[in-house]
Length: 86
Image (cartoon, rainbow, N blue to C red):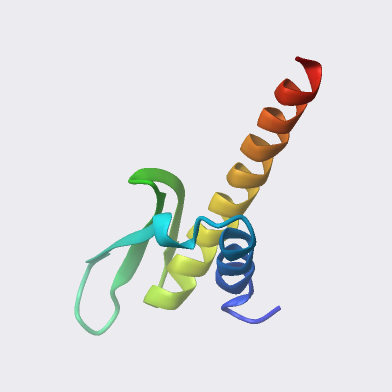
């Protein structure tokens, strides 16, 4: 698994569901310049759906994207089940 797999999967999922424009990121670094720790927040419609940390920004974003993708799929499945029950 490469460092961007979750990010690519999230982008594909959002594109397929017509929500790619709702994606935004907030990135922060902490620590010394030679060894920062990045924290990335993956937001969908300005709601944090995933958080990730890493020694590189792309690794932090990928971790956050993985969390966000799981949360979105669970949310979409719950909405689908609710609609089917009506």
